[in-house]
Image 1: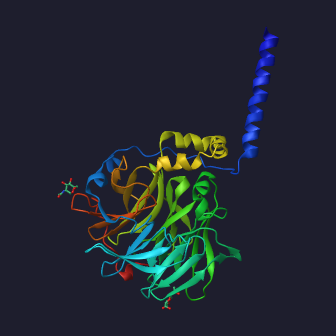
Image 2: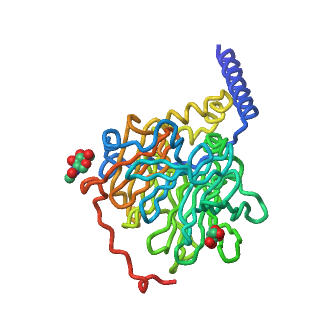
Image 3: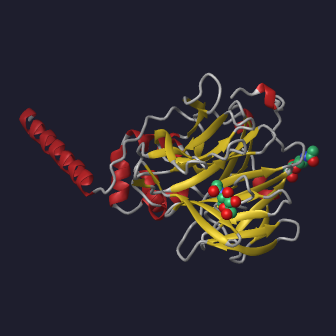
Length: 383
Ligand SMILES: *[C@@H]1O[C@H](CO)[C@@H](O)[C@H](O)[C@H]1NC(C)=O
Ligand SMILES: *[C@@H]1O[C@H](CO)[C@@H](O)[C@H](O)[C@H]1NC(C)=O
């Protein structure tokens, strides 16, 4: 009897090993996920709410603003939006008039957008590189670093002090068309880069990020914050002061996976939390074989999109202290939010799931409650 049990266990073990080996062999992905610290508890600033569900207004719709990934406003309040049809659209938020502004080309998919120092648009085209876009001209600024072509130019922030353009390359392996696989194949292949306007050279500031996503500058431009999607956290990179050139944790244990980050100019960063982080995602990170099985069965896309059927945005101080979340837990008004952009009392939301730009007025009670210290005068900031 004991011998029979032994043989049975052995057969079972061999069977499991064979299946395991087959999955690994068949899988096109080889994730090496980090062990995530558990998410913060959903209290304080993270207390679940549905402010977005009932108060969001739609700008566009009817195919006018397809899959708006990112948005920036000029000094007059006009919005420039990167769309899934290759267009950068110009939107008048007072009349909701949507106009075509610049066309990158058929099949193109602009992502991050911000303004340069001369009023030009700096646009991230994941398949091409970093672009300088004006009404009549599209110029390539950079598409390589250290002689190797970029795969996934994602988001950018421009220094108004010296014109440097900080931007992310989400992955060295995957293009935007394969972004779900790029996320699921969790690996430290993302980078924070810098384009020097004067020398036109691109250099690496941080390598080894687990999907490098949004990037934003602090008001004093003394540091950058970069979102590391698959670590559910953001890193701070010092540009000035004693820690210049060093990076450190800015905020971690986020309750969802972050996408873009924007500075509201009033001392807060707004982080769009793209995909939910239910308890089982942490288990998937511990047992990447399940991610591989999911990929072999062709279920990754469905599984990932399921995590995106809700919306959550987070405001943090420039010290990384969370102060406010706005949510749409059932995705009633919007879902898969990629960007949360605040200008004054207006919040604009971009998404990879809808054909409109979300808009909401932030009244006194919805504005972040903790007032950050006043913006330092130029004499306070060390070079
Ligand atoms: C973008 O192009 C405009 C117009 O040619 C130019 O003035 C500006 O300096 C360029 N921006 C960068 C970052 O090269
Ligand atoms: C602010 O707006 C929210 C959402 O519409 C509402 O619940 C709240 O009562 C408003 N607060 C003030 C002070 O107007």
